[in-house]
Image 1 (cartoon, one colour):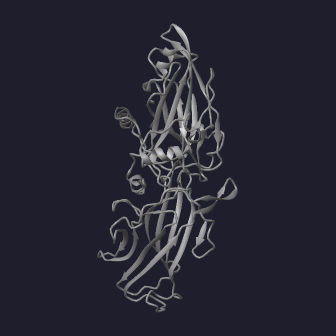
Image 2: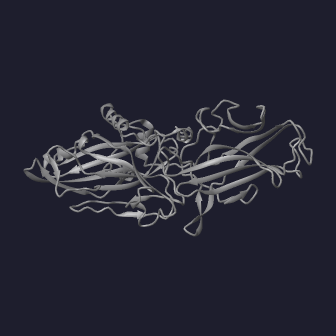
Image 3: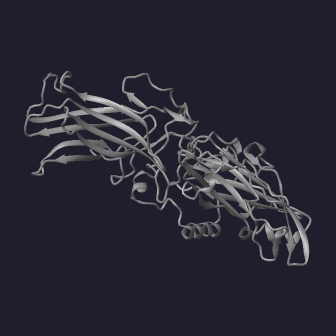
Length: 464
């Protein structure tokens, strides 16, 4: 989509109720990225400068949030007269995967022979001297793109790039000197990061109170409005090869099912049954394997029935593991209750929907009860970064699933947002010994956010 500044603006984006964002002037004055062209004697005659904006440090690329202006300046310091046809600046966004696509181009003309110079004079050519044109470009909150032969509007996606990723979304600013026929244009380009503002809705009053006062959460029985409780799952197995045991478990997640990166997903896990030995085996934190996973498919055929069968365009990543510990005074004969959480690192990518990525997401709920089934939804748009919790079969000494279970016991999609809700941070309540277990897991897996230099430049964008 080509967009000339001054056209009617696209519909505005209304962020979810949530926290305020960090101040734009977080870096010291004058902190900016400058790229230039030099002549044969090393004289810098063409320069593009862009303030670092929301970048957390001076080593990062410039960065903006939704609603910020992309600003900067274009400078010519020429030693002889020039007769360009135009000088312009362009903000562009490209999705690169199996097939590249520019889906947003905003062009702003800084000067033509018919336009006045910054000092107010009108000239047909540029004489020897120093010229500077400041610019500001407003990025739309939405853009119109082709989605399976139909034009649709989607929120502008965030920058997306990391090590081993099959695709990335790249934002650039380009300054261009346009010349006449048979003459080569001069172009300067620099990347910048873009982050939409997405936030969770407010949780229940009791959960808000726990977050603000730094006290433990009240579980689903005491705060039914604050928890999303999944249907029970029956686990059947053999104990120490001698007897059969059945245990039911319920998993609950704090509502809403949107969680800010840099926070923790509160979990509540309840086991019930008549066999106390089976309860003790399965309600052990070391036997529980619940993971946060992300699925990503790319390419023009990403929404086809065969997308998941091609290793070159379908990827599933394990991002984090849930940890659990006994809830205080909650367990009774025939019942075991564990509190838990999933740590969401600040460097996680937020959830996003946009054409030409496509993610195959596990069905809203997939329960195993004696048979293995794993339904899948095929979404006909891009989910560049979609997450779900996956409950895998239990691994306890002396317990064997019967019949054998090869797939997940339960899956539940969740969203990851870029910011916390207003005044609310879902902080970690894990006891130190269990938090250390989580640290050991992170060190052993080698997650994607330990990526390459391009990702370090864009990752996080200073969100805390």
